Length: 185
Length: 185
DNA sequence: CCGCTTTATGCAACTAGTTGCACAAGCGGT
DNA sequence: ACCGCTTGTGCAACTAGTTGCATAAAGCGG
Image (cartoon, rainbow over all chains, first blue to last red):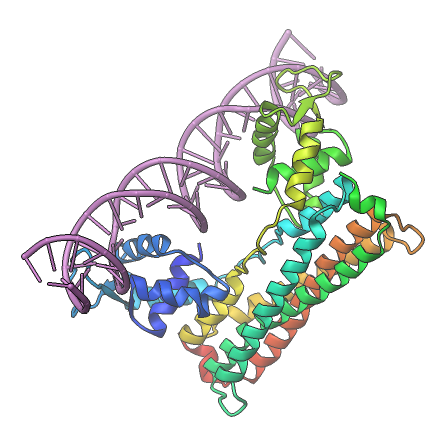
């Protein structure tokens, strides 16, 4: 149950409407917690019903009319509670690793091209993160808030670095496999 | 839609009953694609209905009676197709990073203890993977199948290594944060 | 002032995964 | 013979997330 808390965080950073939130989820927070506009609207409704957020008085509530929300004290308290509560680490679940495992049984035909594509995509994402790091986290800015957000970005950078390295290694292994295996299946 | 393919892979490695699969999903394949017994039984039913697997003739099909499945040629073909088909990399989605981002707004109280706990768990998982590596992948065993499975294990090892390093770094940062921030929220 | 596009909100149906529980058979002890 | 434990299979209800589409208002060009 992370989406409501992702929304609370985003709204605390800046009160917004559903569509504004959707756009912000396409970058920034969305880099580690993506959400579609439908999810967001549904969740905004629930959060309002629970009294954790409210519509900004300025915005009039009509369909097709912008409706901005802000977090109420109860919402802030709930977010603080959730942040501090123990949660088990997310268990790894990646189809690509599954495909590799399957390839050991049915052959690697076709898989190599997709690994190459993944490598490209991860390199691109890594470059994007590194740009953000240079732009948003120059050495002189150093509030506690900056440090925490920088830590999150570092996780993204290190993860993309891991994938580029691992995929490079995997492709090198593929190149060494005997030909019959690559055609099997 | 990875679960059916995870099951096909497992069944190709060794024909099994639902419960045997469940146990195997608790280790091995389950390290990167976990599944509960209910998911597995439901999926076995679907795969059988689609003609991708069948009940081993030896096993009698009564409730509470062991029922082993094997993969049919159509199942193997489907698995090969899926393995070769292009798929976009899984987008990152991790509640822990979200909590860190939230902590930048509502304060880090309570979070540090859970980071420490995560660090322990990741260290433990890393040690487990390394044991498996030593046991199952000695330098002399070197078939193409071994190499592919070893690659998958390496991904697990490298990911756990990333987490232990990142968490260590994060905890070091926490130690440097001014006290008021740590109590806020 | 009519139609087209953009902005914005939202419902409904679907897919995937989780949780809780029920049911059946075998087995070992008393 | 019956009790309780283990093994094994399975249904039903729920939660989370995705996809496709509907609706409404505002802005703008002719």
